[in-house]
Image 1: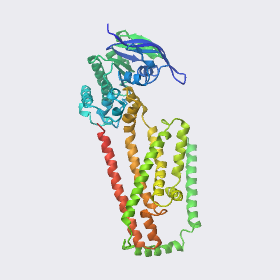
Image 2: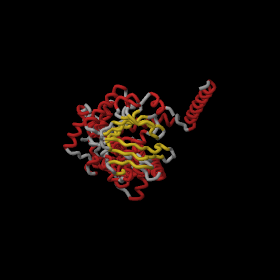
Image 3: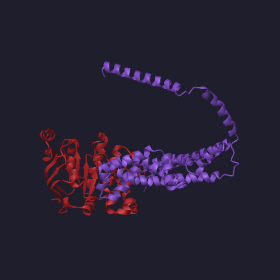
Image 4: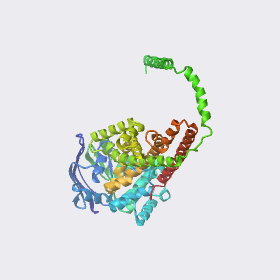
Length: 248
Length: 266
C-alpha cells in the first residue's frame, strides 16, 4: 500500500459574499496517484485545488501534509510548504515578458533567500536544472525566447516545467487543458502523466473533459455543488454516474 | 435600431453640423479675423522674415551653455518627476492603495496638477524659490507627476493578478513576487512613458526659460526684445537641433528597451 501524502478533513470554504463553495470535503490522496477531479463549472473544483496550496484559505476543516495541518501555517512555513506543491493553471500564468527559462527558474524561488531570488541571481546549477526540465517537456530549443512567443500548448508545457523545477511532492493542475485544442490537450496531458509516473509525483488534475479524465487518471473524484459525489477508479465511472455529476 | 430612431439620429447630426458651421462663420465676422490688418500682416511678416536671414550668433552670448543648462533642467525635472510618480502611483493604484479613498485622493491630486500648465507652475515656483534653474526643475517635476502618476497607476491596475498567483504558488516571498512578477510586467510601460515624458520635458525646459532667467528660452526672449530677429532664428534653430538630437536619443533608448525585453534577463 502506498503511503498517504495528503489528507483532507471536512474542508469548507464560504466566500465573503456567502457562497458556499466547499461543503465539507473529506478525502485522502496516496503517493504517486494521478487523481482527476471532475465536475461542472462552479462545482468547487478550482476552490478545492486552490485551497490545497492556500491560494485561497478554507474557512473550516483541516488539510494534513506530512502530519501537519497546513491551514495553520503562516508566512515562512507557508512558503516552505508551497514549494512542495507545483501548480499548473488554465491560463498558463507565465510572466509573458520574461524568457521561458526565467519562468522555469521561478520554480526555484521558494528555495532561495528573498534578496537573491528577488534580483534573479539564480545559481548555475539551478539554470542547468531548468534547462534539463525544459528538455523533458521538449522545449529546450525555446529556452531563451520570450514566453509569449510560444503557442498555447508550449506555454502550458513551460507551466509544467516551472512546477517540476520546484521538485514538488504534489502537482496541482487547475484545468490545464481547458484553453487548448484537442491535439495540444492530449500532448500536455501526456507530458503530465509521464512526469507524474517517472518521478512518482502525486498529481491532482481538475478536468472539465470526462474523456481525458478516463484516459489519464488512476482515480476520479466527482464534485458537485461543493461535495464529493463520486470517488473511484475510471472503470467505475458509469455513464449514469457521469450524468449524475454533471446535472444540477 | 428602429427606423424612427435612425431618422432621429440623422436629424440630430444635421442640426449639430449646422449650428457648428453657423457659429464658425459668425465668429469669423465677430472677431474681425478677415480684415485689412489681417491682409496687411503679410507685409509685416515678409519684413520680419527678411531680417531673420542670415541667422547669426554674433553677440557674445553663451548659447551652448544655455542649451546645456536647459538639458540639465529637463533631466533633473524628469528624474525627480519619475521618482515621486512611482511613489505616488503605488498609492493611486486601486489594487495597491491601503484604502480606496487614498487612491481617489492621489488621483484627484494628479488630475489637478495636470490641469495647471507647466508655465504657471514655473511662475509659482519663481515666486517661491526665486530665479534660476530650481523653479524650472520643480515646475517640470510637478508637471511630470501629474501625467506619470496617472499612467503608472493605470498600468499597475492592469496587472494580471493570476500571474502573480502562479509566482506565489512556487513559494516565492512577497519581495520576490514583486521583483520577478510585477516588475517585468510593468517595466516596458514604465520606461517607454518615462522616455516620452523626458521628450516633453526637453521642449518645456526650453520654453520655461521665457519666464525665469537662464536657459535657452531666456536667450530667445532677450533676442526678441532687442528685435534681433536674426539671433532669434539662430536660437530657434539651436532649440530645434537640440530637440531633434534628443528625439533620436529617445528613439534609440526605446529600441533598446524593446531589445532588452526580448532578451529578458537570465
